[in-house]
Amino acid sequence: MPRPIQATIHPEALRANLARVRTLSGDARVWGVVKANAYGHGVEHAFLGLRAVDGFALLDLEEAQRLRALDWRGPILLLEGVFETRDLELCSRLGLWHVVHCEEQIDMLALHKTHAPHRIFLKMNSGMNRLGLRPAAYRSAWTRLNALPQVEEITHMTHFSDADGPLGVAHQVRTFEAATHDLPGERSLSNSAAILRHVGDAAMSADWVRPGIAVYGSSPDFPEHDAGHWGLLPAMTLAAQVIAVQHLQAGDTVGYGSSFSAPGPMRIGIVACGYADGYPRHCPTGTPVLVQGLRTRTLGRVSMDMIAVDLTELPEAGFGSEVTLWGRAASGQVLSIDEVARAGGTVGYELMCGLSARVPVQVDPAA
Ligand SMILES: *Cc1c(COP(=O)(O)O)cnc(C)c1O
Image (tube, rainbow, N blue to C red; front, top):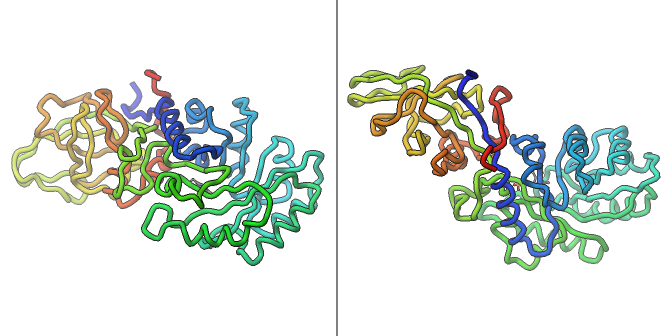
């Protein structure tokens, strides 16, 4: 028997989350963001639940090739654009759309020989100061791009730094509007948080939205709102089993560093999941976990291959019991990845993306 740990991807949840995002996005077309191997879900697995998107957005040419290998003929957008001139040949060959965020990428495009002109998303730095042209440089970049025979159509694009928090998006929307309002072309602004939180805002109406985290069923603004509040379902379950049981007396400690000490008699389970599987090492004693679908807590430090869980109140649980680290238990009970991430001082995004290569991934057999 292989070590009893398993990740399960739920195509039905991806479908439902995508439908939810679509409902909120009005007439906008939807890019399913599948960068980072579909946020750790696997591009091929995610594809099963996300075929209804209008296009896929990602960063790696290798992942674009995998989508084409799945016979996806629709749009694919490279969110960071190309890194060197040679990449443009693959864009032409695979029909990839690409972001242009700097003058160097325009230089490369101007030297590129192609029969089929490219679809470009020209990115403005409206305040995040990561990728994009500043508003003052944006219009001349647009003019230069627009004159290139290698360019077919230019969409205006920007990205929000604070769509999930109190600062919001209005200041960036204003900057973006001021620089683009009289230019022809479609527009793309919103990530998941902007779609969920700022949907009513007229200035947010756009031709393309770019949800990532929401389609995977994690809330971008947890703990202010949880996934249930947004009507999102977990697309990934990480499950393992209890592989040993220990009976503790008062004063007995658990794991490395003896960070947990039993206040009285306890029954604990040792679970075949550790930080080498992608479970966050920083999750302290008390991090929620489901055993046989029932909520309990972790005890002591997370080690490389194991964690301990409290079975004192779960007399039915023992060797071989199902443990849900995040996602959906066999009983249907859900433990949100956001709760676990929060306990470990991080976000659902990082846990999904950090699922380790040694964990086997299956598609939900019930799907
Ligand atoms: C990753 C990414 C998104 C998706 O963000 P979420 O917060 O996961 O919805 C959208 N746009 C760009 C440019 C991105 O890099």
